[in-house]
Length: 264
Length: 106
Image 1 (tube, rainbow over the protein chains, first blue to last red):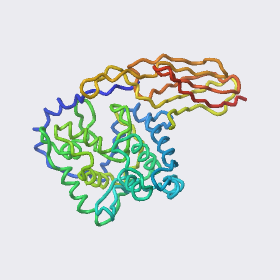
Image 2: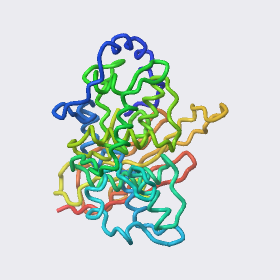
Image 3: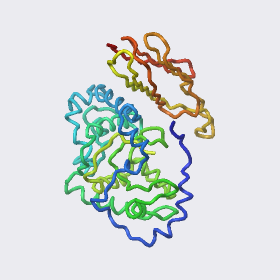
Image 4: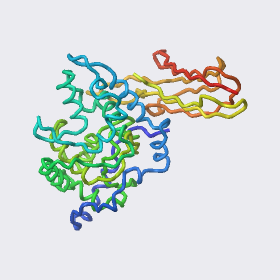
Protein backbone atom coordinates (compact mmCIF):
# COMPACT_ATOMS: atom_id res chain seq x y z
CA UNK A 1 0.00 0.00 0.00
CA UNK A 2 1.33 3.45 -0.86
CA UNK A 3 1.19 6.62 1.23
CA UNK A 4 -1.43 9.31 0.72
CA UNK A 5 -0.28 12.79 -0.30
CA UNK A 6 0.82 14.68 2.75
CA UNK A 7 2.04 18.14 3.69
CA UNK A 8 5.77 18.54 3.00
CA UNK A 9 7.16 17.73 6.42
CA UNK A 10 10.66 18.47 5.17
CA UNK A 11 10.13 22.21 5.28
CA UNK A 12 10.63 22.29 9.04
CA UNK A 13 13.87 20.40 8.64
CA UNK A 14 15.06 22.81 5.95
CA UNK A 15 15.07 25.62 8.48
CA UNK A 16 17.98 24.18 10.37
CA UNK A 17 20.45 23.90 7.52
CA UNK A 18 20.98 27.26 5.76
CA UNK A 19 23.83 28.13 8.13
CA UNK A 20 25.56 24.88 7.26
CA UNK A 21 25.05 25.41 3.54
CA UNK A 22 26.30 28.97 3.53
CA UNK A 23 29.92 27.93 4.00
CA UNK A 24 30.19 25.73 0.90
CA UNK A 25 30.56 27.07 -2.63
CA UNK A 26 28.59 25.77 -5.63
CA UNK A 27 30.57 23.03 -7.33
CA UNK A 28 29.07 21.44 -10.43
CA UNK A 29 28.60 17.70 -10.34
CA UNK A 30 31.55 15.61 -11.60
CA UNK A 31 30.71 13.15 -14.40
CA UNK A 32 31.74 10.09 -12.37
CA UNK A 33 29.54 11.15 -9.43
CA UNK A 34 26.31 11.30 -11.46
CA UNK A 35 23.60 9.09 -10.02
CA UNK A 36 19.98 8.74 -11.02
CA UNK A 37 17.35 9.46 -8.38
CA UNK A 38 16.35 5.79 -8.41
CA UNK A 39 19.71 4.94 -6.79
CA UNK A 40 18.52 6.79 -3.68
CA UNK A 41 15.08 5.16 -3.57
CA UNK A 42 14.12 2.18 -1.39
CA UNK A 43 14.47 -1.36 -2.80
CA UNK A 44 10.65 -1.54 -2.93
CA UNK A 45 10.40 1.62 -5.05
CA UNK A 46 13.24 0.39 -7.28
CA UNK A 47 11.38 -2.90 -7.80
CA UNK A 48 8.17 -1.04 -8.66
CA UNK A 49 9.95 0.99 -11.33
CA UNK A 50 11.77 -2.03 -12.77
CA UNK A 51 8.61 -4.13 -13.22
CA UNK A 52 6.35 -2.86 -16.02
CA UNK A 53 3.39 -4.75 -14.58
CA UNK A 54 3.77 -2.97 -11.22
CA UNK A 55 4.89 0.46 -12.48
CA UNK A 56 1.79 2.73 -12.44
CA UNK A 57 3.49 5.04 -14.95
CA UNK A 58 2.80 2.38 -17.57
CA UNK A 59 -0.92 3.30 -17.38
CA UNK A 60 -0.01 6.71 -18.87
CA UNK A 61 2.33 5.13 -21.43
CA UNK A 62 -0.58 2.94 -22.58
CA UNK A 63 -2.82 6.01 -22.81
CA UNK A 64 -0.13 7.78 -24.81
CA UNK A 65 0.04 4.89 -27.28
CA UNK A 66 -3.66 5.38 -27.98
CA UNK A 67 -3.31 9.16 -28.34
CA UNK A 68 -0.43 8.59 -30.78
CA UNK A 69 -2.87 6.83 -33.12
CA UNK A 70 -5.85 9.18 -32.60
CA UNK A 71 -6.50 11.71 -35.42
CA UNK A 72 -6.92 15.24 -34.06
CA UNK A 73 -7.25 18.88 -35.08
CA UNK A 74 -8.45 20.56 -38.27
CA UNK A 75 -5.92 18.55 -40.29
CA UNK A 76 -7.51 15.33 -38.98
CA UNK A 77 -4.12 13.68 -38.66
CA UNK A 78 -2.72 11.43 -35.96
CA UNK A 79 0.91 11.62 -34.77
CA UNK A 80 1.37 8.22 -36.38
CA UNK A 81 0.50 9.44 -39.88
CA UNK A 82 3.65 11.60 -40.07
CA UNK A 83 5.94 9.89 -37.57
CA UNK A 84 5.00 6.24 -38.22
CA UNK A 85 5.86 3.62 -35.64
CA UNK A 86 6.97 5.44 -32.48
CA UNK A 87 9.21 2.53 -31.47
CA UNK A 88 11.46 3.49 -34.39
CA UNK A 89 10.82 7.18 -35.08
CA UNK A 90 10.82 8.36 -31.45
CA UNK A 91 13.73 6.25 -30.24
CA UNK A 92 16.52 8.59 -29.16
CA UNK A 93 14.38 11.74 -29.36
CA UNK A 94 13.69 12.40 -25.66
CA UNK A 95 17.37 12.17 -24.52
CA UNK A 96 18.33 15.24 -26.58
CA UNK A 97 15.51 17.52 -25.38
CA UNK A 98 15.14 20.43 -24.67
CA UNK A 99 16.18 21.31 -28.22
CA UNK A 100 16.25 24.56 -30.21
CA UNK A 101 13.21 25.58 -32.23
CA UNK A 102 14.13 27.91 -35.10
CA UNK A 103 10.55 29.20 -35.43
CA UNK A 104 10.39 30.35 -31.82
CA UNK A 105 14.07 31.32 -31.67
CA UNK A 106 14.42 29.59 -28.33
CA UNK A 107 14.56 26.10 -26.84
CA UNK A 108 11.50 23.92 -26.23
CA UNK A 109 11.18 20.80 -24.10
CA UNK A 110 9.51 17.59 -25.21
CA UNK A 111 6.03 18.70 -24.10
CA UNK A 112 6.55 22.04 -25.82
CA UNK A 113 7.56 20.23 -29.01
CA UNK A 114 4.41 18.08 -28.87
CA UNK A 115 2.28 21.22 -28.57
CA UNK A 116 4.13 22.93 -31.43
CA UNK A 117 3.51 19.85 -33.57
CA UNK A 118 -0.17 19.94 -32.63
CA UNK A 119 -0.53 23.61 -33.55
CA UNK A 120 1.61 23.61 -36.71
CA UNK A 121 0.83 20.23 -38.25
CA UNK A 122 -2.37 18.88 -36.71
CA UNK A 123 -3.87 22.38 -36.45
CA UNK A 124 -5.24 21.36 -33.05
CA UNK A 125 -5.47 23.27 -29.78
CA UNK A 126 -2.36 22.86 -27.61
CA UNK A 127 -2.74 20.39 -24.73
CA UNK A 128 -2.94 21.81 -21.20
CA UNK A 129 0.24 21.97 -19.09
CA UNK A 130 0.36 19.01 -16.73
CA UNK A 131 -2.91 17.65 -18.17
CA UNK A 132 -3.30 13.88 -18.34
CA UNK A 133 -3.20 13.83 -22.17
CA UNK A 134 0.02 15.86 -22.33
CA UNK A 135 1.64 13.69 -19.65
CA UNK A 136 0.52 10.51 -21.44
CA UNK A 137 1.90 11.57 -24.84
CA UNK A 138 5.17 12.86 -23.35
CA UNK A 139 5.59 9.67 -21.33
CA UNK A 140 4.87 7.53 -24.39
CA UNK A 141 7.44 9.36 -26.53
CA UNK A 142 10.09 9.38 -23.81
CA UNK A 143 9.39 5.70 -23.04
CA UNK A 144 10.66 4.82 -26.54
CA UNK A 145 14.13 5.95 -25.42
CA UNK A 146 14.18 4.06 -22.13
CA UNK A 147 17.67 2.76 -21.44
CA UNK A 148 19.38 5.18 -23.84
CA UNK A 149 21.86 7.66 -22.33
CA UNK A 150 20.86 11.31 -21.92
CA UNK A 151 22.50 13.07 -24.87
CA UNK A 152 21.82 16.82 -24.72
CA UNK A 153 21.61 18.61 -28.08
CA UNK A 154 24.94 20.13 -29.14
CA UNK A 155 23.34 23.10 -30.99
CA UNK A 156 25.47 26.19 -30.31
CA UNK A 157 22.35 28.37 -30.21
CA UNK A 158 21.40 26.63 -26.96
CA UNK A 159 24.53 27.80 -25.10
CA UNK A 160 23.19 31.13 -23.78
CA UNK A 161 19.97 29.48 -22.55
CA UNK A 162 21.92 26.70 -20.87
CA UNK A 163 24.12 29.31 -19.20
CA UNK A 164 21.00 31.09 -17.98
CA UNK A 165 19.74 27.74 -16.65
CA UNK A 166 22.93 27.28 -14.71
CA UNK A 167 22.65 30.81 -13.32
CA UNK A 168 19.11 30.02 -12.13
CA UNK A 169 20.29 26.71 -10.65
CA UNK A 170 22.88 28.56 -8.60
CA UNK A 171 20.63 31.53 -7.78
CA UNK A 172 19.50 31.66 -4.14
CA UNK A 173 15.76 32.14 -3.80
CA UNK A 174 12.88 32.11 -1.35
CA UNK A 175 12.60 32.84 2.36
CA UNK A 176 15.10 30.06 3.08
CA UNK A 177 17.53 31.70 0.63
CA UNK A 178 18.67 28.43 -0.94
CA UNK A 179 19.68 27.68 -4.52
CA UNK A 180 19.14 24.33 -6.25
CA UNK A 181 22.93 23.86 -6.18
CA UNK A 182 23.12 24.34 -2.39
CA UNK A 183 21.39 20.99 -1.94
CA UNK A 184 21.72 19.08 -5.21
CA UNK A 185 25.37 19.85 -6.02
CA UNK A 186 26.81 20.28 -2.53
CA UNK A 187 24.78 17.92 -0.32
CA UNK A 188 23.25 15.31 -2.60
CA UNK A 189 24.59 12.42 -0.55
CA UNK A 190 23.06 13.78 2.69
CA UNK A 191 19.57 13.33 4.06
CA UNK A 192 16.97 15.97 4.79
CA UNK A 193 14.12 15.22 7.17
CA UNK A 194 14.84 11.51 6.78
CA UNK A 195 14.70 11.60 2.97
CA UNK A 196 17.71 11.46 0.62
CA UNK A 197 18.53 14.86 -0.93
CA UNK A 198 19.48 13.32 -4.36
CA UNK A 199 21.12 15.04 -7.33
CA UNK A 200 18.02 16.43 -9.08
CA UNK A 201 18.59 14.35 -12.20
CA UNK A 202 15.91 14.70 -14.93
CA UNK A 203 16.39 11.31 -16.62
CA UNK A 204 13.11 9.64 -15.57
CA UNK A 205 10.47 12.29 -16.35
CA UNK A 206 7.55 12.30 -16.64
CA UNK A 207 7.59 10.09 -13.54
CA UNK A 208 5.15 8.62 -11.04
CA UNK A 209 5.63 10.07 -7.58
CA UNK A 210 4.02 8.06 -4.81
CA UNK A 211 3.44 11.35 -2.98
CA UNK A 212 1.51 12.71 -5.98
CA UNK A 213 -0.21 9.37 -6.69
CA UNK A 214 0.03 10.38 -10.32
CA UNK A 215 2.44 11.02 -13.16
CA UNK A 216 4.01 14.48 -13.14
CA UNK A 217 6.44 16.54 -15.18
CA UNK A 218 9.89 17.86 -14.33
CA UNK A 219 8.34 21.34 -14.11
CA UNK A 220 5.92 20.14 -11.44
CA UNK A 221 8.86 18.74 -9.49
CA UNK A 222 10.70 22.06 -9.78
CA UNK A 223 7.64 23.93 -8.50
CA UNK A 224 7.60 21.55 -5.51
CA UNK A 225 11.21 22.38 -4.73
CA UNK A 226 10.60 26.13 -5.08
CA UNK A 227 7.65 25.90 -2.69
CA UNK A 228 9.95 23.90 -0.38
CA UNK A 229 12.42 26.77 -0.07
CA UNK A 230 9.44 29.14 0.20
CA UNK A 231 10.04 30.86 -3.10
CA UNK A 232 7.21 31.74 -5.44
CA UNK A 233 7.31 29.19 -8.29
CA UNK A 234 7.73 30.58 -11.81
CA UNK A 235 4.52 30.91 -13.84
CA UNK A 236 3.39 27.74 -15.61
CA UNK A 237 4.63 28.75 -19.06
CA UNK A 238 7.77 30.59 -17.90
CA UNK A 239 10.83 30.23 -20.14
CA UNK A 240 12.95 29.89 -16.98
CA UNK A 241 11.81 26.27 -16.62
CA UNK A 242 13.10 25.40 -20.09
CA UNK A 243 16.45 27.07 -19.33
CA UNK A 244 16.70 25.07 -16.10
CA UNK A 245 15.73 21.86 -17.92
CA UNK A 246 18.50 22.56 -20.46
CA UNK A 247 21.11 22.90 -17.73
CA UNK A 248 19.80 19.81 -15.91
CA UNK A 249 19.96 17.79 -19.14
CA UNK A 250 23.60 18.78 -19.69
CA UNK A 251 24.34 17.98 -16.05
CA UNK A 252 22.76 14.51 -16.52
CA UNK A 253 24.55 13.61 -19.78
CA UNK A 254 25.23 9.89 -19.93
CA UNK A 255 22.62 8.77 -17.38
CA UNK A 256 20.16 6.25 -18.83
CA UNK A 257 16.57 7.35 -19.49
CA UNK A 258 14.12 5.67 -17.10
CA UNK A 259 10.75 7.04 -18.24
CA UNK A 260 8.33 6.30 -16.65
CA UNK A 261 10.30 6.48 -13.39
CA UNK A 262 8.87 5.84 -9.92
CA UNK A 263 9.93 7.98 -6.98
CA UNK A 264 8.78 8.31 -3.35
CA UNK B 1 -8.58 4.90 -22.99
CA UNK B 2 -6.68 1.96 -21.61
CA UNK B 3 -7.34 1.95 -17.92
CA UNK B 4 -6.25 -1.47 -16.70
CA UNK B 5 -2.96 -3.32 -16.67
CA UNK B 6 -3.23 -7.11 -16.26
CA UNK B 7 -0.33 -9.48 -15.90
CA UNK B 8 -1.15 -13.20 -16.08
CA UNK B 9 0.59 -16.07 -17.90
CA UNK B 10 -0.92 -17.07 -21.26
CA UNK B 11 -0.09 -20.74 -20.67
CA UNK B 12 0.51 -22.91 -17.60
CA UNK B 13 0.76 -26.55 -16.61
CA UNK B 14 -2.16 -28.12 -14.70
CA UNK B 15 -1.59 -27.75 -10.96
CA UNK B 16 0.92 -24.94 -11.40
CA UNK B 17 0.64 -21.94 -9.07
CA UNK B 18 0.44 -18.79 -11.19
CA UNK B 19 0.81 -15.17 -10.08
CA UNK B 20 -1.72 -12.64 -11.31
CA UNK B 21 -1.34 -8.86 -11.08
CA UNK B 22 -4.08 -6.35 -11.76
CA UNK B 23 -3.83 -2.57 -11.74
CA UNK B 24 -6.48 0.00 -12.67
CA UNK B 25 -6.10 3.73 -13.21
CA UNK B 26 -8.34 5.36 -10.61
CA UNK B 27 -7.97 8.43 -8.36
CA UNK B 28 -9.50 6.65 -5.29
CA UNK B 29 -10.82 9.96 -3.95
CA UNK B 30 -11.28 9.48 -0.20
CA UNK B 31 -14.08 11.98 0.44
CA UNK B 32 -11.97 13.52 3.23
CA UNK B 33 -10.17 16.15 1.17
CA UNK B 34 -11.07 19.81 0.66
CA UNK B 35 -11.25 21.27 -2.82
CA UNK B 36 -11.26 24.94 -3.80
CA UNK B 37 -13.10 27.30 -1.42
CA UNK B 38 -13.20 24.61 1.26
CA UNK B 39 -15.81 22.46 -0.43
CA UNK B 40 -15.50 18.72 0.21
CA UNK B 41 -14.44 16.58 -2.74
CA UNK B 42 -17.01 13.76 -2.76
CA UNK B 43 -15.81 10.22 -2.16
CA UNK B 44 -15.31 8.19 -5.34
CA UNK B 45 -13.45 4.92 -4.89
CA UNK B 46 -13.46 1.39 -6.20
CA UNK B 47 -14.88 -0.58 -3.29
CA UNK B 48 -14.83 -4.12 -4.67
CA UNK B 49 -12.52 -6.23 -6.79
CA UNK B 50 -13.42 -9.72 -7.99
CA UNK B 51 -11.41 -12.15 -10.11
CA UNK B 52 -13.20 -15.15 -11.64
CA UNK B 53 -11.54 -18.14 -13.31
CA UNK B 54 -13.82 -20.12 -15.62
CA UNK B 55 -16.81 -18.35 -14.01
CA UNK B 56 -15.81 -19.25 -10.45
CA UNK B 57 -14.65 -16.59 -8.00
CA UNK B 58 -11.03 -17.28 -7.07
CA UNK B 59 -10.12 -13.97 -5.44
CA UNK B 60 -12.05 -10.97 -4.17
CA UNK B 61 -11.25 -7.93 -2.09
CA UNK B 62 -13.08 -5.06 -0.42
CA UNK B 63 -11.26 -1.76 -0.96
CA UNK B 64 -11.53 1.18 1.45
CA UNK B 65 -10.76 4.92 1.29
CA UNK B 66 -7.19 4.50 2.60
CA UNK B 67 -6.20 2.45 -0.45
CA UNK B 68 -3.92 4.44 -2.76
CA UNK B 69 -4.77 5.77 -6.20
CA UNK B 70 -4.29 3.31 -9.10
CA UNK B 71 -4.77 0.26 -6.84
CA UNK B 72 -2.48 -2.67 -7.58
CA UNK B 73 -3.41 -6.19 -6.48
CA UNK B 74 -1.25 -9.30 -6.77
CA UNK B 75 -2.39 -12.81 -5.89
CA UNK B 76 -1.83 -16.46 -6.80
CA UNK B 77 -4.19 -19.12 -8.13
CA UNK B 78 -3.74 -22.78 -9.10
CA UNK B 79 -4.08 -23.37 -12.84
CA UNK B 80 -6.74 -26.06 -13.29
CA UNK B 81 -8.28 -25.74 -16.75
CA UNK B 82 -8.06 -23.60 -19.89
CA UNK B 83 -10.49 -20.71 -19.71
CA UNK B 84 -11.04 -17.04 -19.12
CA UNK B 85 -9.71 -15.01 -16.21
CA UNK B 86 -12.11 -12.11 -15.69
CA UNK B 87 -11.46 -9.08 -13.50
CA UNK B 88 -14.15 -6.71 -12.26
CA UNK B 89 -13.68 -3.47 -10.35
CA UNK B 90 -16.85 -1.95 -8.87
CA UNK B 91 -17.12 1.81 -8.30
CA UNK B 92 -19.09 3.52 -5.52
CA UNK B 93 -21.59 4.53 -8.21
CA UNK B 94 -22.15 0.86 -9.10
CA UNK B 95 -20.29 1.19 -12.39
CA UNK B 96 -18.20 -1.91 -13.13
CA UNK B 97 -14.92 -1.94 -15.08
CA UNK B 98 -14.16 -5.33 -16.63
CA UNK B 99 -11.02 -6.84 -18.13
CA UNK B 100 -10.40 -10.40 -19.28
CA UNK B 101 -7.48 -12.54 -20.31
CA UNK B 102 -7.31 -16.12 -21.62
CA UNK B 103 -5.19 -18.89 -20.19
CA UNK B 104 -4.30 -22.24 -21.78
CA UNK B 105 -3.61 -25.06 -19.32
CA UNK B 106 -1.82 -28.19 -20.53
